[in-house]
Structure formats: C-alpha cells, structure tokens
Length: 382
Length: 237
Ligand SMILES: Nc1ncnc2c1ncn2[C@@H]1O[C@H](COP(=O)(O)OP(=O)(O)OP(=O)(O)O)[C@@H](O)[C@H]1O
Ligand SMILES: [Mg+2]
Image (cartoon, rainbow over all chains, first blue to last red; front, side, top):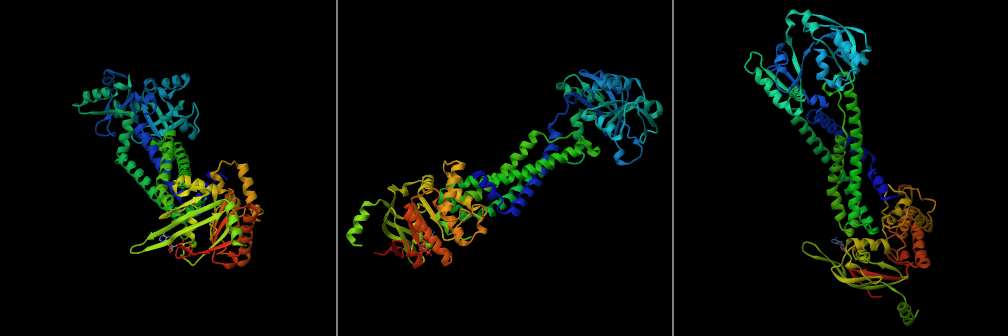
C-alpha cells in the first residue's frame, strides 16, 4: 500500500455517500461544461477565419422584411467591400412537413457565393456544375448523407413563402461545418418563377477585405440606407447569430447565473459531505498522529481525498458533457449548436473547478481535524 | 531480591524514561483538575511496568506525556536522553514513529484497511521501499501469530486478533518503548492472556520497555513492577 492507495481506500470507506457525492459533482460539472461550451461558442469563438471577414446586411426592423435587390450593387460600392451575394431564406418543404425533414435553404448567387464562402471548399468540377445549372443545388455533406443524396439526384422543394416548387439537381456537396445542414440554390430560379419576388432579397452576405475593416464597413453600409424607406442593419456573422439568441432573453447573464449557482451548490454539497466524513474520523486522526503522522500529513491526506472524489465526479461529468455535445452537434436538430464541441480549454477549466471544489470543501474540516490535539482526539468517542 | 542488588542492577541499565516533577493541570470554569501532580519516575531499558489506579487518576495522562502526545503544565521529560517537550510538532511526530509504539484499549484499527495494511501504516512515513515494508509487516504479524490473516479486514477478526494486529502495528517500526493503555480492557480472559503473553515475549525476547496501564491484577502480574497513581500522584513503592 502507498499513501495514495491509502487515500483512495479512505475515500470509498462509505461507498454510498461517496457515490452520491461523485454523482452530484458529476451532474453539476456536466451542467457547467455544457454552459461553458455554449458560452464559448457564442461569445468567444470567432468561427472559421472566413467568417471573420463576413458581415450580414438585413432589414433594420426584422428578418421577415425583404431588401431591394438594388442594394447589392450599392453595397458593393462601399470601400472595403469585396463581394456581395443575396441570401434569401426559402423555407420550402422537402417531402413533407415533418420536423426531421426540415433544413435551411438559401437562394443566392452561386458564382459569387463561392467567393464569399471560401470555406465551402467545393471540388472545382462540382463548383462549375453548380454555377452553370440554374436549377442546381449545393448541399452540406451531413444533409446529403442523411437523405442519401448523391451528385445528380433530383429533389423537389415545395414553396411555403414563395408560391413555387423548386425542382433542383444536386450539383455540389460541401463538407464545411457551417453549411453541414444547409442547401444553397440559385435565387434567380425563384425570381423568374414568382413575379413579386423579383428584386426582393432576404439579406446580403458581404465579404470585407480585412477583418479590421468590419466595423467601419458595417457602419458605412447602414449609413448609406439610414434615411431610405428600407434601412438596414449590418453586423458580423457572429453578432448576427448572437442577435438571434438574444431574442431568447439575456442568455449571457442566464448562463453566468446558472454556472455560479452550480458551483456554489456543489461547494455546499461536497463541503457538507467532507465535513461529515472527516468528523467521523476525529479519533482516527489522533491514532494516525500517535503513529507519527504530522498535522500536515493529515491535512494532505484529507485534502487529497476531497480532491480525488471531486475529480472523479468532474471527469465523469465532463465525459458525459462531451458525449452530449457531440451528439447534439451532429444531430439534424442541432440548429445553432451544430459544429459545437467541448474544447480542451473548457475541459481544463471544468476539471480545475472540480479540483477547486474538492480542495475548498475539504479544507476547513480537514484543517480543524488536523489541528486538534492528539490527547483530545483519543478521548473522542466514536 | 535484596535492595542493594536491585540498586546495583538498575545502575548499569540504561534509563529510558525520566519524568521529572511532571504536573498536568486542566483548568475548568471554576476549579482545576490536577491530572498529574508532581510525578517523578524513571523507567529503565527492559522494564515491564504496570500502572494502576482508579479512573481519572492520571494514568492515560502519564502515558501521553511519555509519548510527547501531550505537554505538561510543569516538569521535564527525558526519553532516551532527549528532551521531548522541546520538539516541535513535526519533530515529535517523527520521533514517535521511531521510538514509541502505542497500543489502545479499543484497538483503533482502520476499518477499510486489511490487517497487513493497518500494520503497514507507520512504515509509510519511513524511507523503506515496498518490498522492505512487506517484509517488516509480515515479520510483525507472524510475531503476534497472525501470519495467516494478512488480508483480513478488522471486521473479519475477533477482538483478540484485532488487538494483536494493533500490537503488530505498534512494533512494526521496531520502537524501543511500548505504551499500552488498558490493552486487555475490551478482551475476554482468554484473548487477554494471549495479548499479555505477546507483550511478555516482546519484553523478554526483544528487550522492549513496556509501560502498561491496567485495572486487572492478572494483567499486572505480567509486569515486573506495578506502580499506583491516585489523584494524579504517584504512590511510593
Ligand atoms: N482535556 C481535558 N480537560 C479536562 N480534564 C481532563 C482532560 N483530559 C483529562 N482530564 C482529567 O484529568 C484526569 C486524569 O485523566 P486520565 O485520562 O489521565 O485518567 P485515567 O487514569 O486514564 O482514567 P481512566 O482509568 O478512566 O482511563 C481526569 O480527572 C480527567 O477528567
Ligand atoms: Mg485512561
């Protein structure tokens, strides 16, 4: 036996209690890891470097209002703008209206879109085919796999916003994460078929020549249309997504609040258990000291025990979070969560929190126990 | 044995414990408890001493002084020539590990550790490697007749066996002094005799100096000398 094994055995002397502690720490750390992952994805991750060069221009009031097609060339004239393409939500039905068959469909201008979305990285011959075919479609790899689509397959999208059914041919497939669950087609298909849609675009994706120019360019675009009947709102792609979740409330404060409550709760739970478990061993501490264990040895043993138990719970929680995030990120219903992952940084932070919880919760009872005089400890009953 | 012979014999033996005017006073709210009242006593190498006295007479307190577990209000203690009350916490701990084996009335084994692991505990503080530790543990357990119970947990042992494991734990670092606080107090007479035989063997064959607190005249009969404490005072021989 080594001191480490001694600590391990002591940690599990009351299996049920230690098991409960591990589970509660595990669940808390699971929650914390999920929170941190979402936080990270929305507030820290800048996404693909390509995304940092993109801004999205939409109607100032609502996503539901269209922008005039003429804006495309006006935006193009703003210094710093390299490319502009329409991105219009089609919202069609594939096969039926079942949620599992729902996916994002955007009408765009393929020839220029491939320049705005460099990360699509489409094989040249497929890219050519998609640009050439006005009824061609580009689809994300995951979406294609899900529906068993191959290049050349024909699919029908039934219009819900626009009174037209699109007969599309799969011409290109991209494995870019951001496009994994989406379909892109040539918007002129809709414009030709639906009279009122002509010159009406949902929004514009704009490529800027350098990330540093993003704020200036965004402001210049919005300033240009400020006094027109159709004012715009331009923001980075990231900010655009953030605005999307902001609709659900103050997510940032929510995440922070929950995380802090979680850490506080596990501190209480684990502190209470450690205190209980150590109080039972007052006499044993005195016996150990009689054998030659020092105050510091005892403190180290107990803190080691607390940290070990916490870390086991933490590891379990983090592992489970990893599995969950992976599952959600790869599921069709993943939505904004797709492409998410638990980063090594998040993992380290979560485990540090676990270790910290173990340390803090063990410290006070451990210090008290280690500090008690031997004679007094030996007289202690129980 | 004539008094002169006794004096001659003690004169050549090494003084192991030298308690000099030890007093221990506990102050409670309004009055004081004199757990030890000016106790002076010497123990020599190879002594087997029984300490008797009524409950509360200071027997445990005296053992605790010898083990540097507690400090006196007044007085000095030299153990193997060292002034043990000058030790700091860490020095006292290391010294106890080396010099003192302590046996309790209630065994005080750690329930989640096997017999061998309980015995090994004091060795975890030494420089011995795994193999050496295992050898020491085996030797100690065989000495108390439990070589075949190494992997048993305390709850799988009888009281007498538990106390023998506790003795093995006390002797595993080969300390010069064994302090036993009513080691047979929780045992039936058969187990008590086994334990006393072991203490006797440790004293006679291994030269351990033993100070044993007991209420039991049968146990005291194993000792060479019996000393009595009363109200913290040592009665004259
Ligand atoms: N921490 C303490 N605070 C107050 N009084 C104490 C303390 N420790 C011991 N005493 C008192 O000192 C006296 C001697 O105690 P000690 O434990 O040495 O007696 P003992 O002879 O071992 O008794 P027993 O046979 O019951 O074990 C007792 O009156 C006891 O109540
Ligand atoms: Mg006592």
